Amino acid sequence: MAKQVYNDYFFDEPAWNTHDGGYVPLEEPTTPQQKLHVPAVLQPDKETDTDMYYTVTAEEGETQLLPGPKTKTWGYNGSLLGKTIIFKRGKTIHITLKNDLHELTTFHWHGLNVPGPYIDGGCHAPVYPGESSDIKFVCNQPAATLWLHAHPCPSTAQQVWHGLATPVVVQDEVEAKLPLPRNYGVDDFPLVLQDRNFHEDNQWDYQKDYDPDGVQGKTPMINGTINPYIDVTTQRVRLRVLDGANRREFRLHFSDGLEFAQVASDGGIMPDPVYFTKVMMTCAERDEFIVDFGKYHDGDEVALMSDDVPLVHFRIHEFAKDDTKLPDHLVDVPDLPVTTGTKTRHVVMSGMDEEVAIDGKKFEMQRIDARQKVGDVVLWDITNTNDMVGGMIHPFHIHGTQFLVVSRNGHAPYANEHGWKDTVSVNPNEHVQIKVRFEYTGVYMYHCHIIEHEDGGMMAQIESYDPQHPKTYKLMDMDTLMNAFAKENHVNPKDLWLGGMGSYEKMGMKM
Ligand code: C2O
Ligand code: CU
Ligand code: CU
Image (cartoon, rainbow, N blue to C red; front, side, top):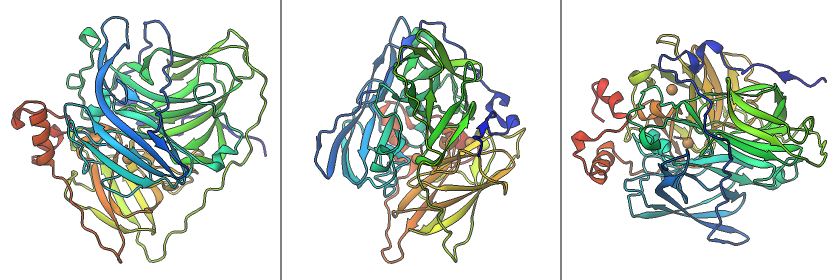
């Protein structure tokens, strides 16, 4: 069969963020190109045949992003973003979570199949300044690129904007046998795609840039580097791309239309590689690409772009010929049969700006919106009602699971949606069906991953329960978190400003 090469972005053009009233186009930085910052691999405190021990510290610092004054930034085990954290499948992972910030945070493992809500690290698991907390779980899921980010409600967006986001890589023996580049920092690079605005003295100002439909910046920032380049020294390069922006969609393509392949989606290697010249990523999604630079020569340069702005420049150097072809089939992804007797779960995402909601409601930390039996495979039907001007694409995410995409408006999902996903974007007027199974019990959040939308209440939670072993959970309440934020920031609770608050107030709700 002839190889199919896709030449569009898959998503509906009228719904792209370029049509938003508040759209902020990217601009090519005018500052000199800098070598891409490749996050160091976080070294375990200790590793045995069966266990890995890590310490992850959230901290504040300063980073030289532009010429001139450094920018005040936050990061994990570093001043901005963080180090790459590796989990080996089958091992028990012990992590000490330390908070050296001046305010509370949480440590959410986006894409990791772990019990909720405390290990999962959503809003119910705050770690207060100067304190630490220990988690432990068994890593038992396929090799994948996941991420860690802060998730305190309703200040997730602001903390991620400050820099609390870092790549997590799960390794396993299946992936290790595939003919894929995996020499970290040489032919295998994480690429965290973000955007920022620089204000006076090169500082970020989240409040000044606030937009309830998602904060955007005109300057692309990749792994915390402005205007980066990569030295290409091998013919084939693997890019583990994360859309780590609060709101921005990235429409990726190379400056000369180079074809590239996707081999993994959010939760792991895809059944078959998918080839294209253009692909769009929405917030929180991860795509792993294999780029073959075989046709270029020493001294050439090609750029990875989003729309018409270069994100990363690839400077080609001499490399050894490597015509390794991707196999037509990579891994088997099981097709989970829906558990008989279960009912389809309908979820409706609606609204824009402050009016965003799930099933007509705003998030409430102590309300459990749905229940699903652990181990059951249930069909979820996610609708994006197009009830406001033009509507927009909402990236829908569920904590603590990897799901399978079944259909879009009754049609086949996009070509690159046949593997494990934890975030699926829904076009306006579309309903997307997915098959969801929780492997652990717990309370898990599900929400739009435009981070200002989740902070604004476009979020709900589900309990995965075991009828034999009923559990009760101590769920945090918003007042406790808000009072803590106020105290830590030395302001009166009534003078506290957090991004998502306005959305609740506008709806006449108390948080
Ligand atoms: Cu990236 Cu609630 O998560
Ligand atoms: Cu998550
Ligand atoms: Cu949304």
